[in-house]
Image (cartoon, rainbow, N blue to C red; front, side, top):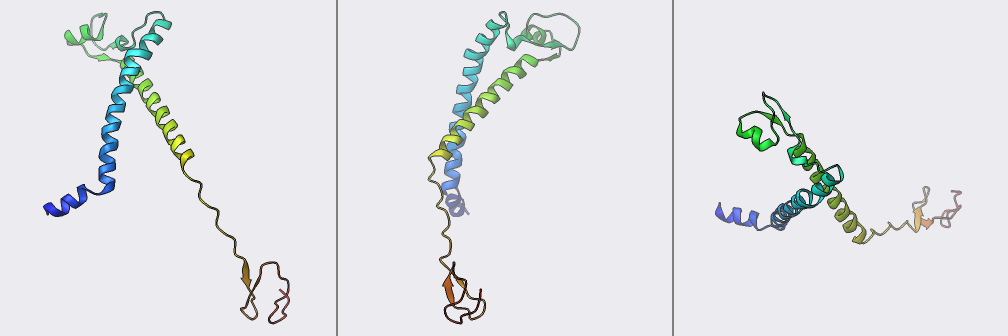
Length: 143
């Protein structure tokens, strides 16, 4: 059983998948940082010093300036600002993957067009004849 598991784990597809997951995780961290540390502060500044991570609706009693204060008080919140951040992250990841797949497809060699047959079969005598022929050279039948 250990031998068959080793054979399964060492297949090319499993190793490719593992590498893809590891690189994807690292890429996700980069995108999170790009969105949280670069894009959202600039966007928030453009919208009048708005901090998206602190956009929330209190679902209980009280008024709080930040999500952390509301959570510390034990009040439930609807954190739509965090959702906006996550949505922007998703759009960036989707666009980046689109660009990568587009480049990979561009680099692939185009598939050769299938060759057209050079001849056809006479329906009367079953001899091979040229495609443009209108009469069979073997049985002289009209095609």
